[in-house]
Image 1 (tube, helix red, strand yellow):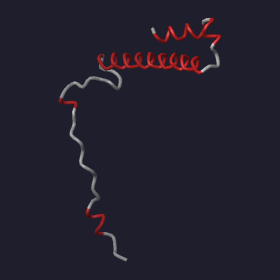
Image 2 (tube, helix red, strand yellow):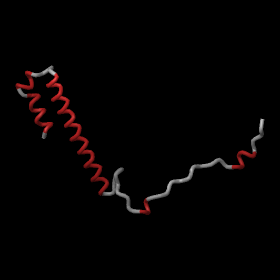
Image 3 (tube, helix red, strand yellow):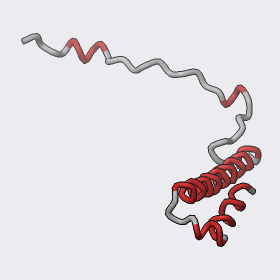
Image 4 (cartoon, one colour):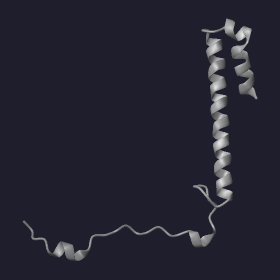
Length: 87
């Protein structure tokens, strides 16, 4: 809503008279920020909808069976070190 108001002011007679001023640029940037926030909210809603339907990266886990403990780091096989000769 605020973004729409800012856009309306930018194209109004008063806004057109203020072009090139810091105030006009401020309102222009505010309108752009509002637009980006609206897009972000749309994306969040889409991801949440996918998660609730069991799709996408925000999928809600099925429970404890989907959780796996971290794997220990891989270690070099000891036999590999026995075959090397010291220089």
